[in-house]
Image (cartoon, rainbow, N blue to C red; front, side):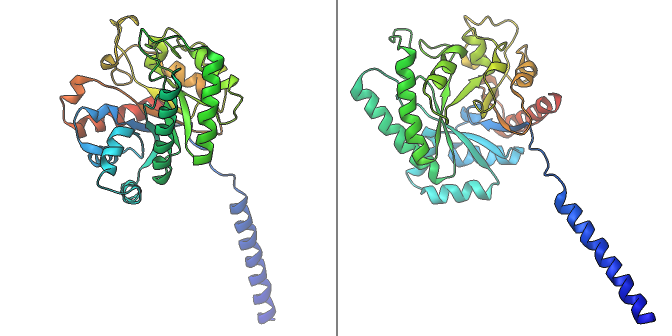
Length: 309
C-alpha cells in the first residue's frame, strides 16, 4: 500500500511538472522594443578618437548599437583586417547598425556614376564582413546648389540597381533624405523613389533635422509605412533657428530644443518591430567637451526620449 501510494504521488507530481513545463513553453515571446538607442559617431567625431576609440567610448557610455562612418572604418582597415574588426566590435558588445557612406551612385555622368557604384560595392563587401547590414546612400554628387535636377524615375532606376547589388552582398542601401540638397530633399521625393524602384528591399533613412531643413515636416510620417524605416536619426534644434539658415552644426541633444521629436516617433512607432533611433549631431560645443561625458549624456537623453514615447 505504501509503495502504491508513493507511485501514485510521484505520477501526480510528474503530471504537474509536465503541465508546468508545457505552460512555460507556451508563454508568448516578449514583444520587441519599439525603439533602441544608437550612437552615430558624428556625435563624437570631432574628438578625433579614431575608429576603435569611438567604439570604446560608445560602449562605455552604455550604447549597444552604433552607426560608423566609412572613412574612419577604412582608415582602420589600412592596418587591421575585417575579421579583427568584427572581433573588436563583438568584444565590446556592440552591433553596427548602419554605416555612413558617400559613394556618388546617383550622378548623371556615366563614368563618375560607375565609379561611385564600384566604390559602394567595395564598401558593402567590407561592411558585410563585420556584420553590418545597412549603408546610408544620400544624394552625394547631386547635392550642391548648382547640381542638375535629376528626374525621380531616373533616380528610382539607379536606386533599384544598387538595391540589387546590396541584396547580393547582404547590405541594404538606405535612401537618405538631405534637407539642404538639390535632389532628394523632400519626404515625398524619397518615398517616390523608394516606391518607384519596385524593390521589396527599399528603405528610407530620415532625420528630424533634415525633415525640418527641407520643409517636409512630420505630418506625413504615418504614410511612410511599416517596413520603410529601420533607422531614424534623432536630434533637436533651437527655437531661434529658421530652417532656411540652420546648419548641421546647430543640432543639439533631444529634449534641449523645440523639434517635434515625440510626435515624429509616435507617428512611426509600430508594434512588432524595432526601429533604431540614432543620435546624429555635429555640435562644436560638444566636441569641446570630454568625449566620454558627451557619450554618457547622449545615452541618458536617448533613453529618456524613448521612455517618453
